[in-house]
Image: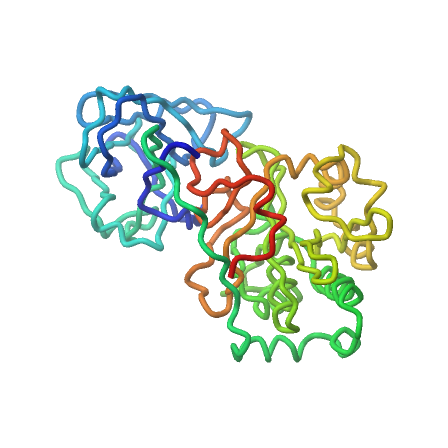
Amino acid sequence: MMSTLYYSEQGFVSPNNCEEINYFRRAFKSIILPETNTPAELFILARPHDMGVPPLKILVNGQLTLEIKPEGNEPAFRWYKVTIPESDLLAGRNSFQIWSDGSGMNAWTIAFDQSIDGSQESYLSLDAGSTKTWRNKGRTNQQAGEYVLRIRIDEGQDPEPPRFAWEPPDHPRLAYLRNLIPEEIKSSDSLMTKVHQLSTWVASSFEYRSSALASLYTPWDAETILAWGKTQKGQNGQLPIVMCVHYAIVYITACQSLGIKSRPAVFTEDLGGFNGHFAAETWIPNLNKWIFVDPNLDAIFYQNDEPMTVSALKSYEDWKPFVRFGKGFDYQKKNPAIEEFMNIYLNGRFAKKRAIWSRADFLAHPELTPPGHGSLAYCETDLIWQNDASLAMFPYHVDQSYFDQPSRE
């Protein structure tokens, strides 16, 4: 984009441990900006406790007070955008104080990224601003971290997306995962046969369970996903969240264990809604393209007997003529959540907005995997989005041709 996003977190948010805001409990955030000659856009990821709560207030540099009222039909984390006149912004450090009326933890929740220590840019006050701490933040008053508030100004330009990161081929965990893959898959001579079989194996391995039915988010670790998904028990015996993203992570990691390049494919109809999806794209060398593989629904799409790319699919409003479901779909379609999702699947509604995740090195760098993707509005800065003006709260934007090129390693 011909503008620049300023932020100090990476959107690694767990919805169960964010920051509660009221009159006494106030969040303070600072962002360093250059001089700007045009109004700026402020983005904050927040959730009202109910639709009738008082507005969320943001004091900008001690001068301008912005108000945000709940949006949508029900309480949910969503991105809120407000405009700040250029006259209220400073060249240098800008401060933002966030609060709402009331004294209990039942007004607003703002998103909180615990992967960053927050020692420089985010503070919490428990006495309406008289004193502040950077350590004892979050719902439990025990975390450090950064509040998810971003600013976009017209000056400058967003950076180029990072190069894609794969698992090291000799990573020892890949060998352990490879041992779990059925022999008939590993022994197949056909790449497309392997891709279909891997998709079926993953889709048939565990039952889909979203954040509407559980609260313990399963890490992006293929063996852990398989274990927790099959037993329906995670840490401390809790029922784990295992949803579309987790099928994709198992599939992508399993592909890498067999020397097949696959990457995460991320979709949503609208950032303010729930109609999103997480699947995969697999590189087929003889076709010189990334094909769309959905290991949650065990679906691959074909046109004239050739597997299709996401770009090709998005040119059609009806995807039914192209889909080929594997046997894993028979297992998945029994789930009411999957049955409901089919209402937006084969018409492509879920894929109005498209991104890829910039990494697939989930085993080598678990610290670079998010703690709650898919359980709240998309917010991670590792997402590389196809150009869309409504996605200005993210730093990486590319045109369609980017997705169809061989990976930039």
